[in-house]
Structure formats: C-alpha cells, structure tokens
Amino acid sequence: MQYDVRALSAEHLMVQLFVDANDESDACRQVEARGLFIATIQPVRGNGLGAILPTGASKGRFSLVLFSQELLALLTAGLSIVESLEALLEKETSNSTRGVITRLLASLHEGRRFSNALAEQSEIFPPLYIGIVKAAEGTSDLPRSLARFIDYQQRIDSVRNKVISAAIYPLILLIVGGGVSGFLIGYVVPRFAEVYQGAGRSLPWLSQLLLDWGQFATNNSKTVLIMVVVGLVGLFLGLRHAIAHGGMTRLINKLPGIGERVHIYELSRLYLTLGMLLEGGIPIVSAMNTVQGIVSLQIRTGLSLASEAIQSGGSLSTAFEANRLTTPISLRMLRVGERSGELGQMLTQSAAFYDGEISRWIDRFTRTFEPILMAIIGIIVGGIVVLLYMPIFDLAGSLS
Image (cartoon, rainbow, N blue to C red):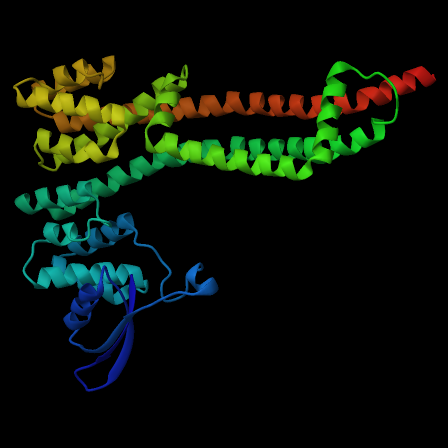
C-alpha cells in the first residue's frame, strides 16, 4: 500500500514523499530510517480512472531477477551487501522497488541477517530465494548463490516462454475462427432464415436445421444473448475452479501424448530446483520441503512420500523411483550422482536433458497442430456457408 507522508528534514524543511509499505507502522519506519521526522501520514486512495491505471508515482513492479542481477554485479565488484543496496536505492526510480529496498536496508541496519530481512517480505521473495540466501550466509558465498538463482530462473522462463509462444498462434486462430463462426451463426444465418421463411420449398435437412436455429435466434434474441453470457461466465468459473483444485492438471495428464510431456516438464522443473538447492549447500530433505510450494499436487504427494523414505534411510534414486518421480534416463543419472557425490549436478543435467526434449516436442507439436487446427476451422466455416447456399443452388437448379 502507498502512503502520502509529510515530514521534517534535518535542515528543518518540510518535504512530501510517497512510501510503499505493508502498513502504516512500516511506512513510519521507512521514513524515520531516512532521518526524517513525520508530521502527517495518510494512505493514498485512488479514485476513478486513477484507481485503475498506474500513475507515475506508483507504476513499476518489482523484478526479482533484475534485482538479483544488479545485486550480483555490485557484490562481484567488491561492495558489501549494505553498500550494494544503498547504491540500488539511489539509482531506482520505481516507488515499489524503492520501498522493497528501503525495508531491506532498515532491517539490516537493525542488525538482522539478509535472509531474515528477505523473509520479512515473503510476499515478494519466495521461500526458494530465501533458502539459497540463507545457505549462502553459512558459506559466505552469496554471489555464487545469486548466480545460480539467476541461471535457474532464466532456464525456467525460457521453457515457459517457448510454451507461451507456441500457444499464441493457435489461440489467435481459435479466436478468429470462433469469431467468424459466431458472426455467421448469430447474424448471417438469422438473415438468411428470414429470406427462406416464405419460400415454401423443402430444404436439405442440415440446411433446415441451421435455418430453424436462425429463426429461433431472430425471435428470441434477448434469450440467446443471456444464454451466451451465462455460458461464458459458467465456463470461466468452471475453468477457474478446475485450475484451483487441480482438475485441469488431472485432465491434461490424461490426454494421450500431452500428459506424458507435462509430467516430464514438471520433473524437469523439480530436478532443476533441487539441483540448485543442493549445489547451494542445502540438505536434501530441506530442499525437498522448500520445493513443495512450486510443484503440482501429484508431484507434491510423491515428493512427501519420497522425503519420508529418505529420512528412514533410503536413497534418493530409490525413493524417487518408488513414487514415479523418475524416468529411466534420470534414474540412471541419479544413481551415478549418488555414487560420485555430485547429486546436485546430476539433477541439473537431468533437467537440461529434459528441457531440450520438451523444446523439440513443442516445435514438432506446433508444426503438426497448427495446420490441423486451420483445417478444422476452415471446415466449420465452409460447412456453414455451404449449408446456407444449398437452398440457392437448389432453387437455381429448378429454374434451369
């Protein structure tokens, strides 16, 4: 939340500033940390268009990757963590990011460790990030841990961006095809129905069915509109409920071909995350508990059972195999990692192997799916047009 603060500076000048804070006490602490004395403080309340659109004072979101990259560059240059954060604060123009850095500096000035300062803003810094920083504090190797996280996040984003890019064109086709089909059925067909209504000729069955729909839509336009709106709202709510309760994931996993690839993608993300944590010095059980929040329900259940098996003295490869968290290739790599003591590296290499496989599958799938989707949309639109013009063809034939 943003607060409008009027404060007195050390030079006895009244200044006004906007502070991003969790609550009023947090805003007061940030202002006092700057050496200012608060006169008035009140929350900023948006109204009208300003409440919807970002303004110059509030625009900008905190980017964790960008923050980590800049912090890594400063730490590598030899600055301390406090000096690095102060340098980032001086150059930052976004109020939201300035608020995050200010709160971090205030916590460090109070004597807290950097990981504890991050944990105070858990809505911004995920447990994964806090965990690698906490492990780095034990080894005094924060730059290397930040570099691992940046590489990890970039690899996750790379696969996600490939999926999004592959879905854009089919989505455009569906929207355009659905729009054209809806226009034909909702506008053109009712107009044709009015023309054919008094023709007194027997029409082909499919054409008659389509024209009957056109007449119904013409006579009950408000009812049809309400039905469409209710159907769209019901579809949206149903999808949201399915996503929230894992129903969508279960449905996708049951699709032939696709479900297997989704499972491999989830395993790839699991291996990459565990590998980064293990290479950062975090014990395997703690690492498995840390990744619970970023995996699907099915993987989370298997991970919990595998964690119990490892705590009972079992090996990671055996526990993962028993809970369907491996493939034949990754199982062999895990066993090699256990023998060589490089388990974290083997997990990372397994993730890299499956990332490549997923990327190749996405390319093949889009090259096959896009033409099929175009053909289906063409058949639907063409079928509607042909059914509309069949009575005209019939009439022309009788006249000739």
